[in-house]
Length: 265
Image (cartoon, rainbow, N blue to C red; front, top):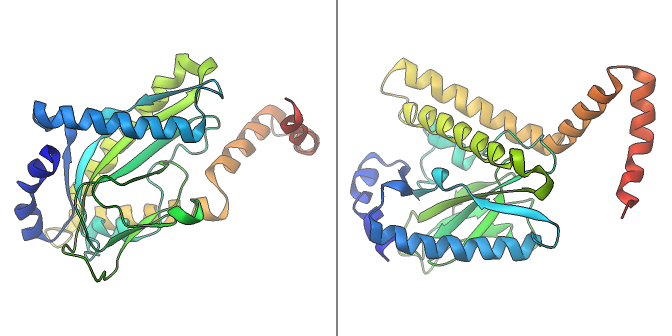
């Protein structure tokens, strides 16, 4: 409740612009941060249970520098806001095997008319209307998703307010570089957020318009590349090419035998 109330203070300004609104959770009051910590613990526990983190000898850590409060505007298709209604991935480090970054969307308000579409999730999570206390998580770098506005008979709100929470997971044997992976995702997110804010309203000036077109083009390419090729597949292909040093026969030999590794207990 404390988190919701703090974001509601920002809501009038966001609605006046008719666009999405973001606020880093690091700027919240101490009281709201206390509530947030409980939410993080709940989500963290769910991820660890679902992915069997400890049983697989992996490490899960919070990436709180990326966490934010978010007011969606699924009816707005102008400028960089278009990315949210376009099938897309959020990051571009999906080509790194063994490392996973999670973005979790935790609902604060509802009932509303914003639906999250996640075609790569389990059937019961492919279309989610995240209400208060509900949450869904996906791979920040690999899973395609977007939001849609859909009329709901019981809805009292057009838009939704959510927390975007972030975690990263890696094998325990890679602990010496695990945090670097988390920080790389955060740095990309900071860069993307700055570009997003600079192009949210493309009618302001030509620079904003050009940045918006660039962001929307990259978004379309990123989602399409994941759907057609898959960043993990591209990462594996790069490893094979590197191991073979570009020699065709060696690449064929490695590609024809490496799949036997899945049978190693």
